[in-house]
Image 1 (cartoon, each protein chain N blue to C red):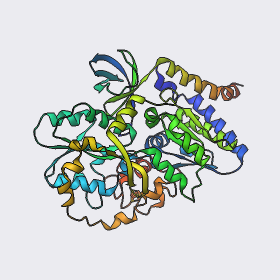
Image 2: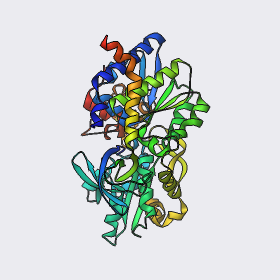
Image 3: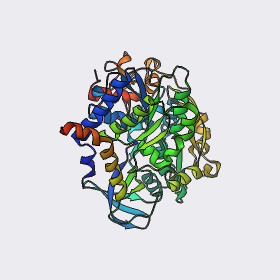
Length: 366
Length: 79
Ligand code: SF4
């Protein structure tokens, strides 16, 4: 069975669309929902779904791009260590993201050692092959934090240090929902993150905010069916957690992965780039892992890092307002002009999961 | 970075597996997969780690879910 093809089946897609159209026509009012996942935006753009949504259904992008929410000072810290001559490993998307002034790529062009890895296990393998310190700049949400945790739990080489910029998505949804001017009536949550956390994690959120949360996968049919479930709940005045990605998500999630995550990390308040200080939104290494914590081992180097002079145009980047559903990429005056994937000003134009990059490459829906 | 990719396990060696992703083979860690897996199983993989065994009945469940969601509209289209 080729599951992939079935999840893109055109007639079923049309049928779901018809159902969405009917619901929104009956509603006869505007409805605004938000997805909290860069992969949802990619699929919406790639399959041209946005242009086909009913005109009165507004699907906003939330803080779902892990690269985009990594705070500029977190990148600055990594750049500072790279400029000290320390060897840095990180995921590909992070290399070109500007900090307040420079990116890791800028540091590399000036001679720093910055290498791209594809799997957290590579960090341990590369460290094992040398005696010098190796720093893994570990970024991303639950889905990448679990692999980082698993590496640290498996007797890692003593010269492996983790600079954690991992973040916990449910904490940011709380910030968006709590903002007084939020018009968001329901949320489409990321199926992959929920594979780990379980969809039960959203129950307190739904209880508190009286807004439905539907967990959805990333194929066009996943997204359309997730939207149908979400919109129907909203129009019926319901607020429940629904699982529209049952092939991967359970209520409890992956206990083994969550156990690894929380043995290694604890939550702390942290800045999400351009968005807000998110209470309990950052994942930090627990004190038991201090021996592998780059912020502990290189505390002196980080404290001695020269002050960063922010580049002037960075202040005009609207990524934060875009990721909280207030603006869209085309509202930024730099979009496609001063800011392009080959010359990004903000993180949203760098990452393949960033709203600006996705709209630039697929064309903005009219 | 956040992309999860489904693949099929070809062979298992301790806590690692060789997984086939539509023709591309990669070594994948089984350290945090949610339940025991065997060669032939489908898994969802994130940055080198299997995070879920996708049971055949789960695939079927999802298809049934689409079926239920679309049944009445498909009926409508056939008329
Ligand atoms: S177009 Fe560039 S500067 Fe404008 S919001 Fe997007 S990333 Fe920021």
